[in-house]
Length: 106
Image (tube, rainbow, N blue to C red; front, side, top):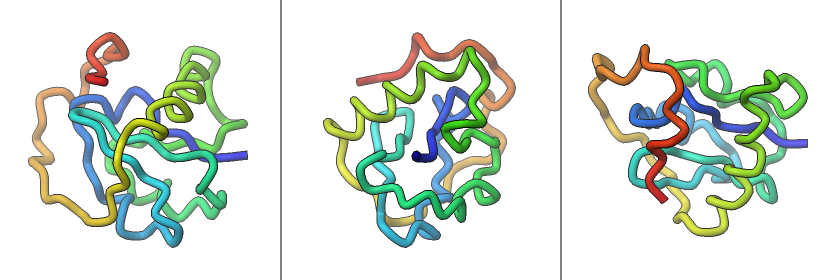
């Protein structure tokens, strides 16, 4: 089992979750983060750190978010590991926008 980053992270990409990860399982794209399921140890430390509630345990995903299992797995093979916090604007206009899957930049 693994943890999964979902749609709320798209265009927000807050990195509060990154420095608490004991195994560096986060990967960074242009406008989204993913969790590498091969590295994640399911410690759940990252979940309360995410200000937009984008991280879920695999078994807790809602049906419309299950596509992110595959997205995290595939993109984690392409993107580089991120290990440090980046101070980003928490007043991002994308925070409340839904249905952002189509704007992930690969």
